[in-house]
Image (spheres, rainbow, N blue to C red):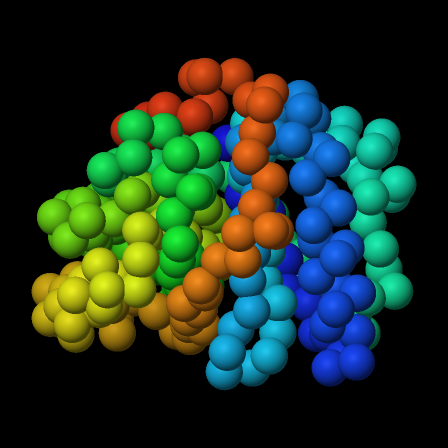
Length: 221
């Protein structure tokens, strides 16, 4: 599975056009290999963020070489940053599939840059500390992706602000248990209330790519 994380700086005067452009992405719901796409505004920075999940890198590349340019509108943002990488762990929750988890109302993202040599421990505590705690708190599900050698993205889907808020109260305790300060050199966090009209629900992704619980590539390369 492939995760694609997009950040856009959108001028205030272009926000309506940006929203309209995001709504047009619904036309790719039948794109082979797409699992889903969601997004929302960061209330702290005013930036727009979009997360897309694909069955694999080949299906995403086929989309880029085919329909992408006919849908994308580069004129609605002043800057864009795009990162993508392999999902190495899916984190199960109350939703039966990844696609259904993406129907949640809230997305929590931690974009983590690790200290040298910290990857093995950081990966282990995702599975042994963070994933069970989130499952107990009511997470719908999530993905853990390796974007670069020392950069990992943790993206989790929540049904609503209240459920996530109860989990957030436990985060300081969990950080101490996971020794997060030893592993993470820097981190940027986002909690986004997802815009329903930006959501792209797949009509084409293979069932095997949607199921939670598959642990891929767990060892550090």
